[in-house]
Structures are given as structure tokens and as C-alpha cells.
Length: 376
Image 1 (cartoon, rainbow, N blue to C red):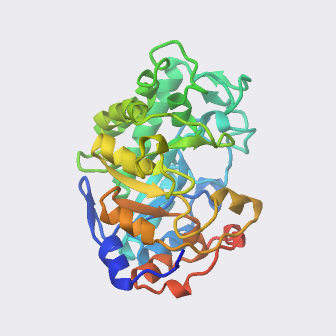
Image 2: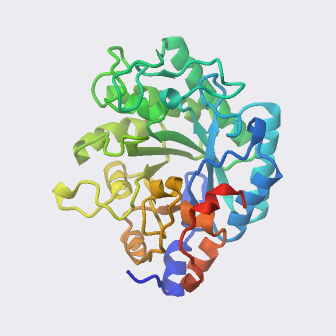
């Protein structure tokens, strides 16, 4: 596929402003959330401020931060992953938001609880148990943690709401709730990990109850115009063929309660954005496209944007060649989805958005996995 895109077309389609609830974003380009582990003690420092601000200054309209742990003992496992609770941590994040705004961008934190993905953690997480809907590891029937009690559920719901309130208070433009990739909220959504027999388990709609209660608690805590983004996926960590829904009807049953609870935007995570989600229907729509069609909500697509290669290879030290985005522009022009999240390409090149918007695609380089090794 050609790696060229006329500057006028890319600018016309990607450069359009968009309003997400009460937030106006200057263009359709989103920085995807990517864990970097450069925040000792969970505190984002000046290097993190520079990292995000640099990309906002180079044309990224909306920054979604790396996953940030909410204030619950079992939320995380690494002391180098940022937290979204605590005075020093929130002061660091306030500086990040200020820097992104000064650079002309908008920013939301991704709020995260990893649930049963948790391994033995570093202090201050070392003694906390792994918790989940049924205490099951992803892709296994082995019980390696603790099924959450009602007290646990209430505590985690409260932690998400408190983090969202803090985000609005310190100057962020919205929040993203991490409900994808086999982490806690996704563990409730997926039948493979949710074997509960109470109100939080059962059929697909019942399995949305916990995530929907988090969304509702956040919606009640923040201002009505403060956007709530919900990220979800079919695939899971180490179970890449897992699916929440086999048909559009099953997907609609899962998404409808989340939309009703207060989600403004769905961030539909796939490994390759160009793959149709339900091929048996004859439709070319990807997951974000189906999500918009089924819910009427705005959607963000993501998955190897700008690169011809699966992102998982990056973690094995492999690179990826440049891939053109004409097909992406075609889908945006057809209004199949609303925004495009870019991951590895923005790690490789902080100027990626500016180059694409200006038609300088000849300057784009193949992805080098060494980009993961530093924060720049």
C-alpha cells in the first residue's frame, strides 16, 4: 500500500475539530494510552510533562495518558506506573495537564485497576491480594486470587469516582475508564473470567453491572459536560482470540447499559484497525464502526495505525514498516467512527501528527522497538 496521503485530504479529514460532550478537541488525532513505567513512586515528573506536551504541540488533539492506578490496594503492581491518587502524584499530573494545555492540546487520564492480571508487586503493592470477579487468572480455571465481596466492589467503584473527581479538579478535560485487555472491568464483562452467580454475573447484560455502576458513579461525581470515555476490547492479555461478543446483537447487549450509565465516547481497542469485526455479516465495519452503529455514541478506533505490523511484536523487540492511512481516511470520511488513536507511531516519532496533517509522509520512518526504552 502506498505511504502517501495528500496533505489537503489528511488535513481536511483528520484536522476537523470535534466536540465530546462539553469538550472541543482541535482535531481527530488521539494519542493512545501506553504504559511506560517512568514515574517512580507513581509520581509523573518533568520528563512526563515534556513527553505528553511535546506530542500535543506537534498536532495531537487529544492525549489519553498511560494507565494510572486508582486508589485501591489491589489496583496495581508496579511502583513505576503512575497513580491517580495521593498529593504528590496529583500535583505531578496537574503539571502534565497544564503543559499539554499550554501546547494546544487536550488531555484525559486513563483510570485503571488491573484485577487478576496482578503478579507479586513492588511496594506499596506487595501485600495486597489479586482480586477479580471470581478470582480466576486470565485464560485459566485456576483460582489465584480472591473473588470480590460487595465491600470490594463498593471500594473500587468509589476509587474510580474519586479519581475522576480529582481529574476534573486538577484541570483534566475528561477521563477514560480502562475496561479492556483483560483488566478488572473487562474481567467482569467476559464470561471466561466472570463465573459469579450473584447480580454481577450471569448473562452478558448482568456482567455489565459492575462496569456500568462505575460509569454511573463517575457520571454523578463529575460535571455533566465532563466527557467519560470507556475503552474496551474483545481480545485479552495472553488470550488474543477471546471475544465478548460473537454477533452485533451480543455486542449491543453489552454496550447499551454502559451507554445508558453515562459513557460519552467508546474507545474500541483492536490489534489491527482495518480488520472487519463481524465478517459473517458481510460488513467491513471494524469494532469502532459497529460500536457507533449500535450505540449512536462517538467512537475512537485504534490498532497499528500508521504501521504494518502487530503491536505485540514490539514487546518482542521487533519493528514494523510504515503503512499508509488512505483506508483510515476513507472510513473517517464515511463517518464510520470519529477519532483515531495512534500508539507506536507516536512513540517512534513525536512529530507524527504534524507530518501526517501536512502531508509530509515521506518523512515517516519504520517503527524501531528501541523507542520503548526511553521517554522522549
